[in-house]
Amino acid sequence: MTRIKMCGLFRPCDIRAANEIKPEYIGFIFSPGSRRYVTYEQASELKALLEPDIQAAGVFVDEDPKIVAALLGQGVIDIAQLHGREDEVYIKELRTLTDRPVIKAFCIKNEYDAAQARRSTADYILLDSGAGTGTVFDWKLIQGIQRPYFLAGGLSLDNVEEAVRYLHPYAVDVSSGIETGGRKDKIKMAAFAAAVRKEEKL
Image 1 (tube, rainbow, N blue to C red):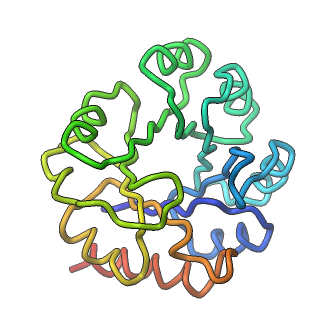
Image 2: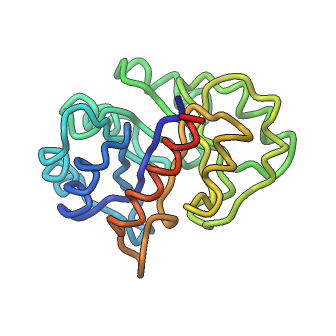
């Protein structure tokens, strides 16, 4: 079954919508450059509203691993999602500080990028077209990847059924594809989840 991750939630109403729709994962973005940025304090308040069966991922860009581990230890997030230049040394250091799962994001532009993702020691890999570009990359580049991965990059109600049918990813990760005017849209969130679940039942 393909799981669903809805990323970039930053308002209490986003959490309430997620609690109703029940994606397996949601994401808090801790990169100050993002318009969906939340502080650690805001994330803690939002996490308190989140149903316990939904896991929260914290999205970081080259953050100090001690800070990442502290947020995991405090229960503000359940999973660390790394979107910067974090390498194998960084992942190894993070593992000495926490036993919580790690997702490492890779921008897939060619076969070399896909090979790098395949070799990562992270628990999961996330395959994207680039940080928040909202565009789809060439899915043919990742057909040979056998390990579980999160598929991101330009997913929306228009293409997610095809993505699930074509690739059977471990999870699909969506942000801008469930927004209207830069804010999460509950109707789009519900429709996206329904499309993924519909395809899984076929």
